[in-house]
Image 1 (spheres, rainbow, N blue to C red):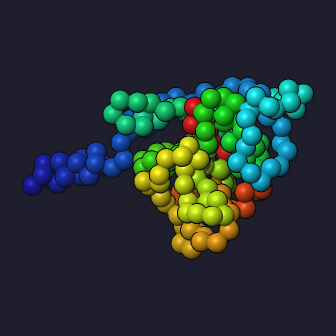
Image 2 (image 1 turned 180 degrees about the vertical axis):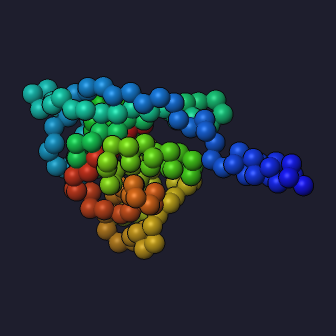
Length: 182
């Protein structure tokens, strides 16, 4: 009977979120774009003025996206508007992160929490004309909106609430840390 309970307990622990999501974190210095505010989806990163580039600390992690691919994520702790954050991500040949499942959501939450951040932009937004979508153009297949946070009117951008792991709709001009998927 004890062996059965032990096996049941181990099976329960093993069935929880997979451990393969995280690899080692690395800190490095990068040169993202300036902190100007812009309310539209960003312009071409090659149009950025080099004199506006500033040295900034970022933090990296890798998560397994599916059975055959690893995704690399970078957290920038210096707040920017949604569009400027996307410009920085594009300048590094990526996008604000699109979260495809609960494992990635919880692992990114844990990753961002390590750096004492409360909110961080993710790659989900709502143009004035339509519903929520991923910044990379793909349909939303997974969402984790907090209660009453899926706004229906106006333009909204989405941030990960690090305390709860839920997504919240925020004014796109708000200056927040952000996560790029590279």
